[in-house]
Length: 539
Image 1 (cartoon, rainbow, N blue to C red):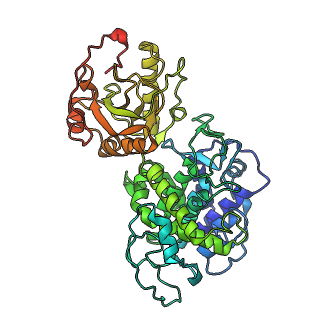
Image 2 (image 1 turned 120 degrees about the vertical axis):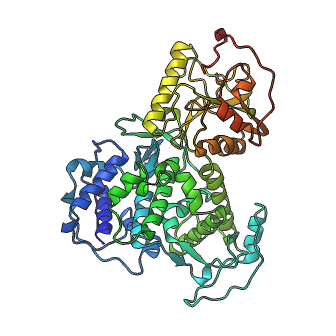
Image 3 (image 1 turned 180 degrees about the vertical axis):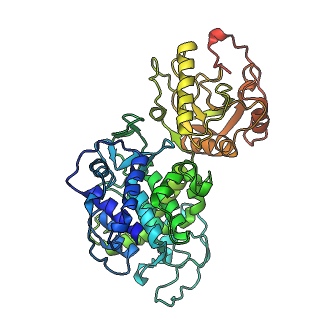
């Protein structure tokens, strides 16, 4: 109860109109500091536990239906619990919004990712109250034939039609022909944790917009004005971007993962400031895999694509029932909602959840490209694997990886005389891919072949040892799969080691032996002599 009170007071302070400036940097450490200060004052709080979601905007039937069995009681607030600096900072964090090319309500996490605070706090709230399955009313059941037709074109396998018996509480079990589901005994229930963090936002983002049939879909990443003391976050694509940005999805996944953890944790729950410090640090309960660096892998384990379809579908139905004035949903049939749910789940899973997280150049504070980049003619047919050799140790934190990226760029630009860092992408051992020249600029990584393929390098020396397993999976599977989906790689693409094309030991004996076992590995090609005057990348 006291933890709920802390969350509520934080939200109330975030919305308090007296404070409009944010003198402190927009960092996750500041959010943790706010929670820690509230927790320190916990014994003097005399609070009930109104819903966090209800406080992030005007109370509405949708959020109340998901969190409460009855209307929450009034609460007595003490707004002087936070220092003026933290109160000022807090006003910029809720609610999440996108406006004039800038994203508000986001903070920079220690791992280099940007996180929306609102869905993160929403997940914590549900986790403290208890994750539960919410039954949908009987009238929400769709016509099986109507929705079957809506999904047939997606090529998804629908299980055979079965009867729809009533449950003890009067709700009806889900006809599995309505949507593709993982289990045939799925019922008309939605997960309140996934709904408040992710699936409602996903469904709404893929609804047809006013006056157009084109949904906004997934949104872009962005750049901070500075990394050391971030104040402003500008989106990379500012032309009417979707609010379902990378930062929002990061916050939604974090909220879902931590909410799930809290709902399963024995009472009393751990202090939220400690939990967030662990999650955005070395890992919850000492588990290095349960931290923000690996949110996408952990999110994929939390829910499958087909289950996500059902959850988005249920969320849209619930909005349609509880918010009848919603103009986007008013005239949509159940089959159209099913199409929206299927497309949203597919796009989120394939374009976000199953793709590696790529930190843009601005995140590692890249120097500008010198000159004018030459554009690649996409799609390409090759992916060339390198190791950096120097730096010779894997980087395991954002600060270390970003410093390594800047060091390599300085060497390539100032010593080699190149226009930019040579690689297309660089793999850290911290769970992130670092953008070099990216998907569209010709690199300087594989002499004589730079315009034919992407150069992907792994930070470290892999002559005698292998990179971490998650790094190998990203180079072998997720990065090329997502490049193929986006049209950057051809379906018949080939993976090759640098040494197959240039006289070099790169990518190291151990790594080369490993990639030679991969499905897309290509045979050895004729080598080309590479004098230093031709600016071969250093190995």
